[in-house]
Image 1 (cartoon, rainbow, N blue to C red):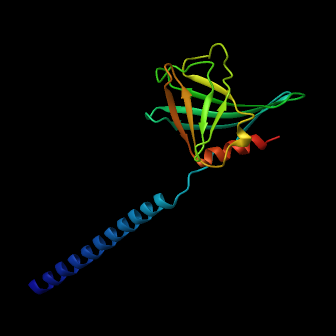
Image 2: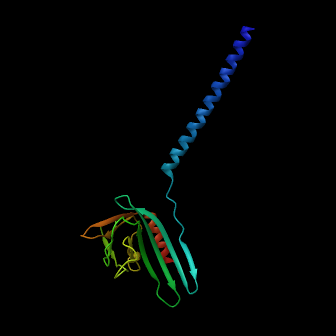
Image 3: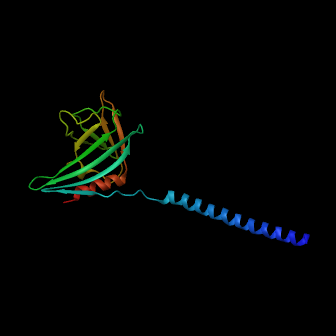
Amino acid sequence: MVRLRRKRRSLYQNILQTVLWLLLLGIWTIIIFLGIGTFISQPVLAIVNQIEAPGEILYRSQQRLTDSSGNSWQVILFKQVQSGQAALINLRLVGFPGVAELVHPQPLQITTPTGDILTANDVFLDEAPAPTIAQYDFKDVLPNLPTESLQLSLPLVGDRFIRISVPRFVVQEWQEVAVKA
């Protein structure tokens, strides 16, 4: 009788040990696949939005990017096509209140990876809707941009700048907006 109990106990221990090993193996497999997935995943391209109104079409790319201080900015490139008029292509940058007070009218500086500096004129000649909003004419700048990452330099008071890095996939999305009819 004692031998039978020992055999049962030993059998239960073996089954329990096998189940625990399988559970541990499953957990490690999931961890490995999740870890590999973070290294090989590509950034997701956002969809270029199209908004239609009578006599007007608006194409838009909107991303949230951070500046060199870690503050978030909405970066919106839009192309406005009105019947019978030349298309407008503008880049709007919107920061959260209190982040910075942008200076108007001052051009935006765009630095390419090769060190070339392009400028975009400020659309807000007199006053912006809020101190953390800027909008720049990108119609002549966009065709000259390489399909590589860029750095935007927003002018502040006292010859200071806020720097925002723009990843390559965002620049490619902007160029997609530019070719929309």
